[in-house]
Amino acid sequence: MIDGIVSMLARYGLIPRGGFRFAAGEAAPSGPSGVPARSILLVGQAGDAPWPHFSRWRRSQPENLADPLDTWSRTVIDGVAAEFGARAVYPSDKPWLPFQQWAMRAEGLKPSPLGILMHPEYGLWHAYRGALLFDVEIPIQAPREVIHLCDLCVGKPCLKACPVGAYSEAGFAYQACLDHVRGPSGELCRTTGCLDRNACPYGAAYRYPAEAQAFHMAAFMR
Ligand code: B12
Image (tube, rainbow, N blue to C red; front, side, top):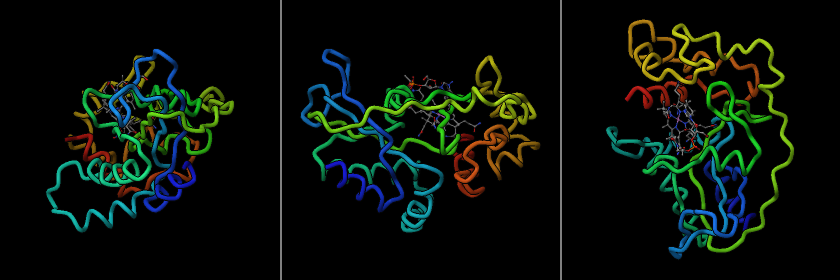
């Protein structure tokens, strides 16, 4: 089954991002039958691999379609869920589901100073597009030991590039970021993406192209 899921996701540039079994008695979201799920498989992306698939699909959609990436993700991942007897949930579902906590458990990742999880290969250039919940236990490998690259990073350039210091030890100054990105000096952030995220030296081969970063920044500004 996992092989089938992997090859269906690959058609869209998506990959499984690890999973785990919920412990007995743990508050798990419901599976396809409506009772608490027994296991979960996260679905996401490394680098911008889904971008060409998403862009092609988007050209066939109305120009003013709201939340196009979420809509594309639902279209694709709902199809995978239906094929493999799972229930799909999404990062944009409300109330928000704990995707980053699930990801830390599934792949052993830890947060970078920016809040984005640091991946040993993809750096900050990865995301979650959905998760598949199962009524049954699926064969999932336990996460391997991961070196948290931020522990090795001495200069922490990710905390120095933002002109308004939006990210700091105190967390993410959401309003300061938004005001700057929307304002007259935010042109570079709007067109090439978050300067702090781009300052990270890891996973450079997976960095999203400017077009994709501008798309995400526009969504953030809305
Ligand atoms: C709300 C939200 C935000 C809010 C944060 C407000 C806040 N202070 O809570 C805002 C709008 C600021 C935000 C921004 C961004 N976000 Co955001 N966000 C979410 C969302 C939808 C819900 C978070 C949540 O509360 N979950 C519920 C709790 C119970 O789950 P949790 O796992 O415990 O949540 C963790 C996060 O809340 C995290 N956290 C708290 N504050 C912040 C701030 C940032 C910037 C991040 C990344 C995480 C983070 O700490 C919690 C502890 O683990 C998640 C998706 C999801 N469902 O989790 C994405 C998510 C966390 N965001 C993500 C990303 C990438 C971003 C951006 C960096 C890029 C973008 N999408 O534009 C931007 C930053 C803007 C910039 N300068 O470039 C990714 C992170 C992926 C990863 N590799 O780790 C997620 C998982 C979405 C996804 N599809 O993959 N985000």
